Image (cartoon, rainbow, N blue to C red; front, side, top):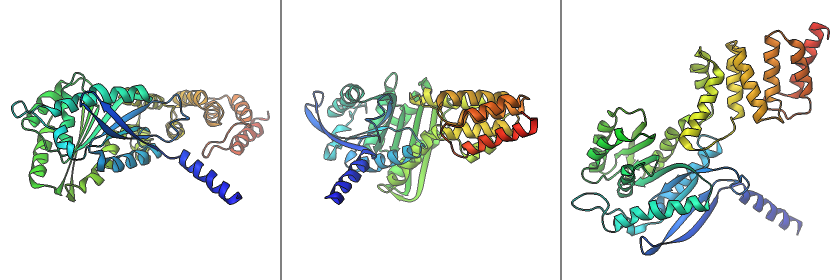
Length: 382
């Protein structure tokens, strides 16, 4: 019995710490029928009651949902992208009708127009109303459904902020329309196209042509990425394109890397603390989420400030760290270092000593702080 209870407890803990998958039947008045949805909520969604999450909308969810949801969960676990709500629409054979376009205008027609309104006027408002969502949406589609997502670029403002086009099968005139439309969009747009050398020949050639045209666009608000995977087929390219797209779109979100530390922070002549503030302001503006600054980023910028002897920046970083992580030694350590280097060792000693009952962070241990306090006391005879 004890073993059974222990197993049940472990299973409960394990279930609570992984992403939640929800299946729903959504009754659409626009379509005049119900649609099957698959929704993945982030880990600990229920416990983080103040947190808001971007949306990743997946068409062709019958086979694209799992690779997208798995990558979103993996990347967000390692903080390479924000935790996100993944919403998949099961389509099956209806994908052709869903994505149908008019033979004259090449814009959504008949059931395609209804499906267009279903997503924009029913599904996404429903998700916004039921879950805690941030104002950032990425769409993922494959061939016909990839083309369909592009229609949302022509709304003012565009419904989606990011477009992941896997081997897109573009409607006639779509390329010309994109070239004309994209420079006119004032807000930030992320746009990714993937094909493979073993993709369907016509689609690969069309993707290469689209790439040559999009890569020449001049727009500060348009971030464009392209991959042509060696040996990838029409279906296998998704397994390589999805993680590449997420990595590129959310590159600014990632923690400060060793390369960024060496090639950016250590070469800065401007205040390093401002770089830290700007990084998180960009994250807030782009993705609609407000997070505490990561401990890793505090340490990276503070260490760079020390090496560059930017003591005022170090003080700013320490003050912000004390505000965001008041129960840890993080801010106390760097504030003490500031006072040490600016000629006030007695203040530094008291700060180190005052943090003896706080939580340790990374290499900053209580022993480290007390050792620094003892050294100051010995050197200056306090």
